[in-house]
Image (tube, one colour):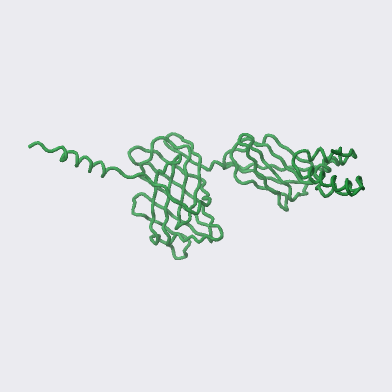
Amino acid sequence: MTPSPRAVVLPILLAILAAWSPPASAILCPDGEVTLTSPLVRIQLRPGGRSGLAGPKSTIIVPDGLAVDPAHEPIVYLLEADGVPLHRVDLAGGTAEVNAAGTRMRLRPRLTHTDVGIRISDAVFRIDARFAQLDLPAAPPARVKQLVKIGDDCFSAVLACAARGTTVVCRPERNALLRGTVLAGKHQPLAGAMVTVFDDARLESVSVFSQQDGRFVFPPLRPGSYRFRARLVGRADLFRNPVTLRAARAEQLDVTLEPASPEAMALNLPSTHFFAPLLARWPSPTIRGASRFRAATAIRSGAGASGARRRWTSGTPCSRR
C-alpha cells in the first residue's frame, strides 16, 4: 500500500518544528534604558551550538527614584549582535538563591549551561553572566548590546567587537580616559577652568571643569586624536594638538595657564563692563539709548562681538547709521 502524500509530509514537518527554536525576541523598555557599565563581553565561537559567552562584572548603578529588587522581580537578559536579537534568557521572579546577608544572589534558570550571579552593595549591582552551549552565528559581530531588564527597568550597554581567531572580544567603544591638573604655577591649582577636547572627525566636543584642587577627569572617550583647550577668565587660552588617547589606557595631562594680556582680557570682559565707557562717550540721552542698545546687542551676539570690543577698548567710536 502506497502511503498518501499527507502521511509522508506531516512527519517531516513535525521533525522540522521540533528541531527549530524561535529566535531571541526584543525587550520592550517603555521608560527608556539606563546605562549599564559593561567592561567586557567575550564570545568563544564553536560550531554545532557549542559557543560560549561571558559578560563579567557588568555594573548597574540605580538612579534615585528607581526601586530595583532582583531577588523578587523577573529578570531578562538579552544579547543583540549588530541590532539583531541573538540570545535571550528569562529568569522568573523569586527564584534567586540569596545568601543570609542579602549581598549575593545566584539565579539558576531551567536552561542548562547558564549561570547568572549578582552582588549587591547599596544601590550598586554587579552582574556576572556566563552562557555555554549557545548556537551563535559564525561571523563575528561588529557591535553587541547587552540589555538587562529587572522588573520594568532596563539597563543597557553597547560594545565594539574585535575578532581574534575564534574568540570575539567586545569592549566599550569609549574606553580611553583623559585626566590631569590645571595650574597657575608650581603647586598652584586653578579651580573652575573649562577644559575641552575636540573630535574634529566626528564634529564632537566634550567639556569638563577643574575642581578645587585643579584636577579634571573626562568621561570615557573614543581612542584617537583630539584637540585640547583649557581656558579661564584672566588666563590665556592653552592649546595642545594633537592629544592622542589609546584604547583602555588613561592619559595624564597637566597644564599651566599663564596670565592673559590686557588685550585678551578686554575681549573676555562681561558686557556690563562696557556700559560705563559708552555712557560717558555719548552724553545725550537720545544717542545714549540707541548706542547702549547697539552695544548690548553686539556684545551678546556671537558674531562680531570681539571686533566691537576692540573698537571700544581702543577708543575708536562706532559709526552711526
